[in-house]
Image (tube, rainbow, N blue to C red; front, side, top):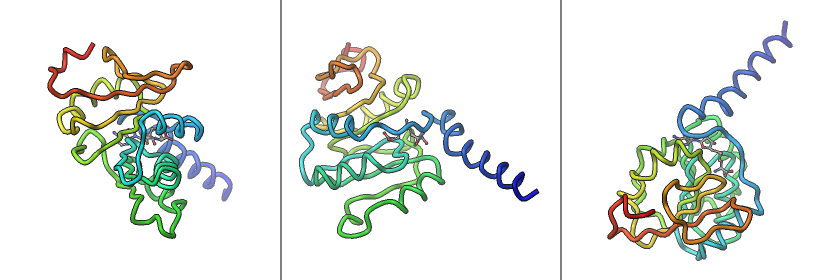
Length: 179
Ligand SMILES: C[S@@+](CC[C@H](N)C(=O)[O-])C[C@H]1O[C@@H](n2cnc3c(N)ncnc32)[C@H](O)[C@@H]1O
């Protein structure tokens, strides 16, 4: 009996963490740490700059941005379980004021403070999200897309394995002039 309850609870938690977010933008699948480093290097991330990770999962992008690049890192995550879990694993000392995780739907957010936006979401989510992001991004901001590119928009840099796509936007252009 106890075992059945345990497995039902476990199944519910896994469903909530992995499957439910699919309906909001992307399932949970963490980026490799090596690729996060590569992406931030390609973005020319500088200490003190502000990074947003859209769908921050277990918080690994935030930790690398803050610890290895000296950035201020803010994670937006829709799943309350991952928000709670990632906060448990954040370094407590010295970095607590440089890393934040907010329970937030990325579709309802203003990115005006972002220097770098890291996104690991599906094409369908990016298609919907991109025009909204562009409305609030500052002209100097850089967007790093992981595994999924922004369809119809020419990246400034692409890695040879086609995993990382870096975009810088000239906001003087109209949206359909990007391709
Ligand atoms: C592919 S994972 C990427 C996790 C992390 N960024 C990384 O690279 O390791 C996508 C994450 O986005 C979250 N997510 C999906 N839709 C979202 C939304 N609308 N707003 C905020 N987070 C969302 C999921 O819960 C999941 O943790």
